[in-house]
Image 1 (tube, one colour):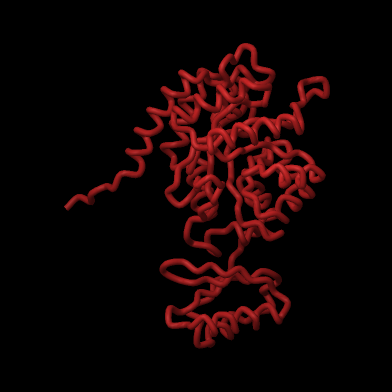
Image 2 (cartoon, rainbow, N blue to C red; image 1 turned 45 degrees about the horizontal axis):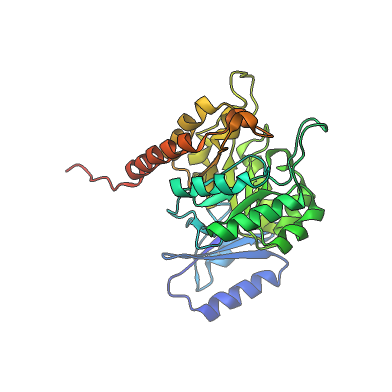
Length: 342
């Protein structure tokens, strides 16, 4: 349930109303925007008489929310959330960012790749220190040493780091290292203990859509994080598993506008994992940009044929540079004001 507060309400009246609601056993989520203030009421709201609330001096109207996700719901928070990723980089609310780098951290070549992607316009550095792999015999990542290399590259280039955390027991290590954005991969999208653990921090979380998750399930994953007190969630559409075998996954590009309609959280597109092949990555990136994504996550490697993981879907620095020029043109077209016909 949401209660829309009248413009004439004072802060004291709002505080009193919130205290009154919470005193009856409900949780609240207050969203103060430029045009209106909304109080989200979370709990078994069937016990609340909406007419009683509407009779109060400060309440404009009351609306029930049927969706199970509350804190991630745009009805609770009409204005876009802007997530501060550190180093002066923000995403959402018109702020578009590109996250680029290798699938996995392999060593000092990380610095060459990072310099190249930044020169082309990337604003955030990605790289996996811990790698979830289908086979237990595949390369699993450098671990803590990989985190140290990412931190070193971040300091040199003044770029936020995006890297995947796989185990609730590692969250404190990521905090100690100063990781800017913790990524939850598709295989952990419904690892609820992990979602709760990152939710106890205030570090931004890039939450990827699960292998076969519905949009509502993705939003419920975000709800797990936000219910623990962390509002800094970025949603990522990275393709879902379907009957199609010509690509690694099926890129659900229409999920981007759907998520923007349902939620206030920023939405990123990952064309690398979505397609699985270098030849398709740029086209999918352009589609995600045109669909209104708040950012992209793209894998880039200086020598894809020698990459330790997922080289088949990585762009070279030259290919990435070309893609960035076209992405900027698409962004200009998508965000340009349109004059109404007379």
